[in-house]
Length: 52
Image 1: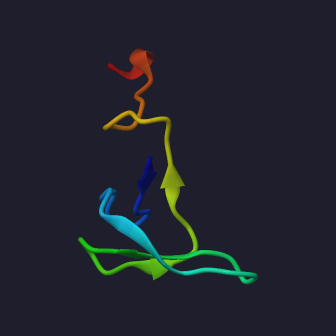
Image 2 (image 1 turned 60 degrees about the vertical axis):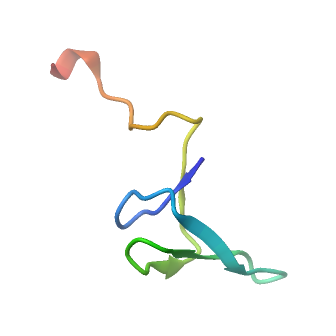
């Protein structure tokens, strides 16, 4: 799953690509860039069990 690095939304989609790489846009906050956060499908980020 891909998440927006600015707001964490999953409403992110590719708008351009090719030999320069993929560019993404977030529907929620308007972020536009090549950096996205990928995870294994968990809805929430993993938390360290030692931190409570």
